[in-house]
Image (cartoon, rainbow, N blue to C red):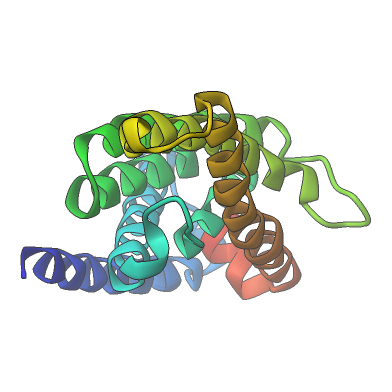
Length: 209
């Protein structure tokens, strides 16, 4: 019950912050914000993405946790191509989603994987393949495949009843997690970036400083 209360609260917060961002984006050009207002705008974006990440994970809970998962919220890991503030927003959202939907181990390892992935994605923000942010989508795939794959194998597998060696379990779980990340990031995430880059209204909300 608590998870759904949190999801509802996060959804309300996301709607409120989204409306605020949209209204701000429609402000006249001669009303350009000063430095303080720009910082506030970035904080709003950060909170908005964190709230959306939590909502997506908890509402789509059967697909968001475990060795076999397609965490749609991971598509948001591509947003750092539009600004460093999204590194904080996505990482915070992952932390909260794991805190309320998984275990403390996943809070540590999963959040670390997301933070590292977002940092590298931000570094690759200007790299494109045929106009698509495909290179920026690969860090979440790789970091989660390695870190979460090892996490699942070591902490969530009954090694005493599994005949396969640990390294093989890590590889298998890593591939499983990586496939889910490919769908979320390299398919959905890249499409999300392209949509924002192709739409001026969305650019004003997500990309303008």
